[in-house]
Image 1 (cartoon, rainbow, N blue to C red):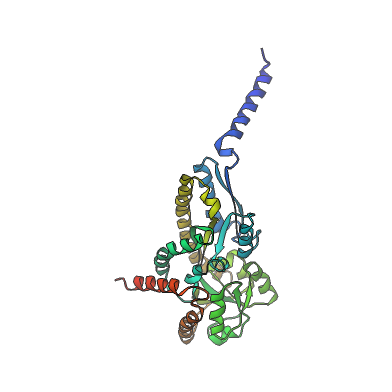
Image 2 (image 1 turned 180 degrees about the horizontal axis):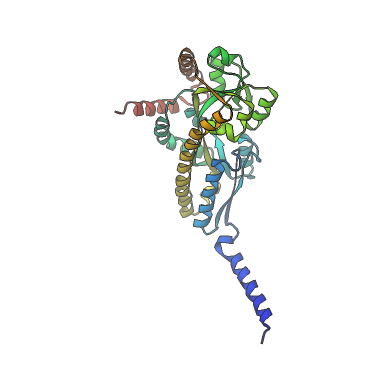
Length: 339
């Protein structure tokens, strides 16, 4: 008869084998390596990890995601290059970064285009099929749209007038023709930099005015090197969760549908989370010594007027006339609704 200790050891070995072979711990049949510049611990990565966990659970471990956060795979353009050679299979991209691949996706980032999130939601819903088609033509699957929110001018000195803005060293996101063209229309030559380079540039004085959402400036620590926020939204910033279309198409149809359904759930919650975080961040920034500056009415009028001039320069170049007209039609459609 086997010794009791021997029986106990066999039981433990059997139990461990069952754990290793169980679906929850099995090696992924379909593994997606994805990256983002969003920092670990931010609401964007937290919600994305919730999405990843549910996909793994619902697929019995067959579909899994390996996440590289915080820009460790480089900025958006570097991430896309790594997708082209198979090092990555997707990621969370900003509108500016992926706009170099799919220019149509830039259109909602036109400065001073939106005045409320209700307008944003209506236009985004209407444009989503066009965006999905444009990405598909480039071999990309748009799984969900993400949000940064309304962005503001954040500076080392108070800016209430156009002359005040011109007197500072202004940043523009690298690869973003919308911001660059708009600032040039104002008579400003901005310094284009990738997002990961902005904090260092603020520290050295290379730039003095940057643009971000209220929550984004906290997460990226830009508020530690600035003192003022011009309290008028400069524009709306967003992004997309994209996967390599070929790799996504190799999934069984049931898994493709599952990913879309789970993404719809978590990325809708992410937009809600982002908006709450931006609201809460206003007080956090003020509590940390950041002052809100109200722009002069004449300056606001000039800024809105320069938007149309900028659009005339950009149509057919930074984005198509067709997508711009579709955007304006949706915006007019919303604004003409009875209150």
